[in-house]
Length: 157
Image 1 (tube, one colour):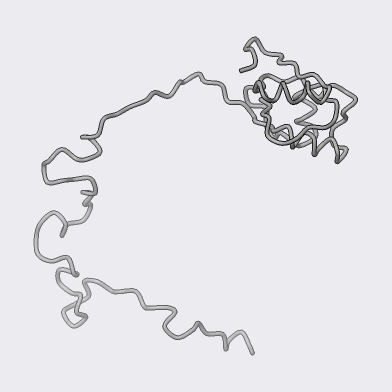
Image 2: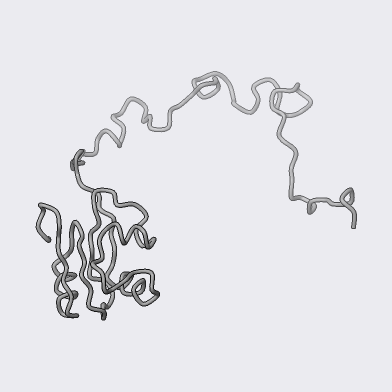
């Protein structure tokens, strides 16, 4: 087989429909758009238009509120921390800080801080210093003989 012998499968490609190219093409004059009216013209955008009736997206009630100054935490599960300790990427003997989590590659960005959640098992005696933690995570670390200290002004939630 040579490069010049390569062909697409039959029927895989279709030639573009050349609209408005004379009466013999079958798509001449009005170009398949019918006669007159807004939709026959160019630059038409009537996706949400319901013929003068109030559109559905305006009839539905608007609810909720997005807090402009809310905190966004990098979330870490206890199981992952244990996995990194087992792999030797984190040292269980030293206090595990947010910077240590960042250096090990467990957290990509700190954002407004790191929050530890209780998903997964923790067996090692860890000392964690993070911005936030769930109550279950604090209990799980203390049960394993370690300590989890929340360093921000905001208490553990």
